[in-house]
Image (tube, rainbow, N blue to C red; front, side, top):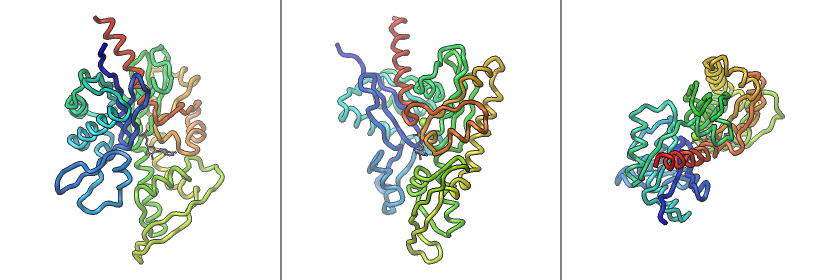
Length: 335
Ligand code: ADP
Ligand code: MG
């Protein structure tokens, strides 16, 4: 019997993941599109396009259409989705003909932006498109008991935004979003190296510094890394050695902003649920959960247990996939 494919999409600002009900995660690519500005043609999508950042000739521009957590460029997002869905159907052998799709929308997006996402997926030929709020998807994917009358707190530190959500009985009780996350940390590293060494480094280099020696906790064993960039005085390439303690101080202020958002959300929590948070703590998801020392630092400053989700980069995609199963159950029940 022919049945429509069921797929979940995590339309993240840094990475797009596609989850198929039958095969699990079938695509995981950076949300980057390279466009030829003369012909307006898409030249590359995903990993191939990310590889081009900072290295392309002038007519080819790598764009991150979701950079600030919302669809900054509707047409490019729609094109990117189409290319990636096509790739999935070819590579993973999944029929994407009239699929039933659950898309997680960056929370904090307006109704106009949500409609844009809905339309982009519908224009691909989806039969049904359901939108799910990001913190709910992240919590489901992190194995939290979202349907129970107990508070689950998810802090999702992505590329463009950090979302903090308190979920109980399947719904969002309190939620805050701040446009400070992985991208901002990269920017702070670029600024630091420019200010202290007069050296310009690219986004990709900054991201690898963050992943390798970035640290959220001042108390850690210092490590060094060699970094290459362009000397702003001589204009020539130069190699310098930077330390994890310096990167820690460059990241500190942004991490404090994330902390403030977590605190503000916990303050919004209904008192009946506050006790649950003291017992169960909070769960970190998104790529930012992988920053060295973040679990230790957060647990000391907010004084509740802090856990890291099993696969933080995949929590939302897994959550959209699991929510598909709930939707199909509901639809069967309605028939
Ligand atoms: P989004 O949901 O917005 O697409 P993700 O959850 O995929 O974002 O996370 C992407 C962010 O996580 C990027 O800024 C990336 O640099 C960061 N990231 C990934 N791995 C690590 C790591 N090991 N340490 C610190 N940051 C990381
Ligand atoms: Mg995300």
